[in-house]
Image 1 (cartoon, helix red, strand yellow):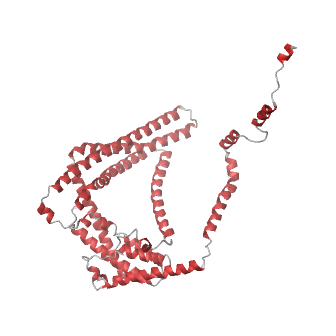
Image 2 (spheres, one colour; image 1 turned 60 degrees about the vertical axis):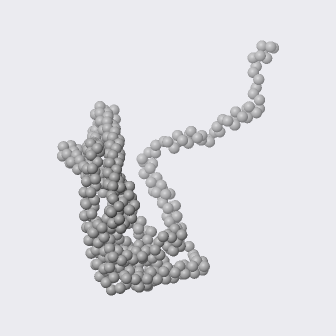
Image 3 (cartoon, rainbow, N blue to C red; image 1 turned 180 degrees about the horizontal axis):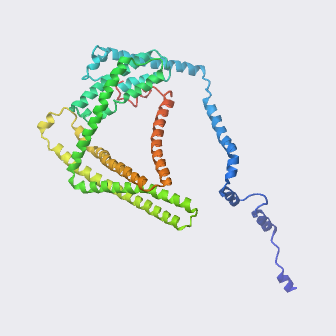
Length: 439
């Protein structure tokens, strides 16, 4: 009996049995691991093709439904309609008052557009903003006709004044050509407004006059850009201690571009080897993979080195040039300062922001060198390596370049068209932000 009693193990208690039974997975219920493994399984191509219509329909139906809901106009209440009519009248009244103010000023007098010395308190951006505020609410308002005319007149007068001031190079505010750069392409913004209005347009004589002064301003801006490049080059020559770093930066940049262009050849060689051998374990394919990896890593190292050299050279150039210019400004005597009619701090601000200007200039020769090296390298590859895969990759490379440029242009144009009719609060609703505005 003792042996028998000792060999018999006590049965587990009822609560332990229930606990162990509850912890065991029930039959027919998938576990988390099973769900993850099922999601990670590859879907056969035949199944994807068979389910393609249903997949596209499942994704397209919600999109079409949401678009339809957003396209259905919301029914406005009588209070909202009354407020909308009041807002239309108020915006039209403000535009009419601005046109009358311009009519009374020197711009409205005969020959006033040629008076470039007198600056108007109402600039081209102000009258354009008023016209846009009226056009988005009522594009058939009669006040828009005068508004378009005064938009063209004010822009012509402002372009003439900026053109002459920039050409004379006597006023510090216009000497850097930034004001002219922000104005010569504004004819396109005026065209966007006329396309939005449709019923009214700018008279032909004003359009012709505006196009002529915009063309002159454009060429002056380009000529001034070349002059600024020459000035920047002269300033960089002053930084003699930075010359070795600049030369090293240009050399490494060109060398990096050469190996970056070679990447296309090694990628083409890798794909061609895979197609020919049809095995990822072949000796030729493994050699192509190793060569491609070496080129990729070496190009990344060169890119890092080029970045470090660029930062070092730009820092040395800015430090030397800024120091010499500050010393030249502070060395001026009282007689020189007494004849300066502009703000003296304007010179200090120009020198303070000079490093950014020099940085943009130093990118120009680097980009030219990189473009020349890239074109020469790819031309030699095409001539020496007659591989169909190389031709395909080069075609894809340039197609991507031009495609990205076209998509950027299309996105910007479509954005202007889609947001042209958006009704935004009027400018006079935000007077606490624009308290310094002339209006």
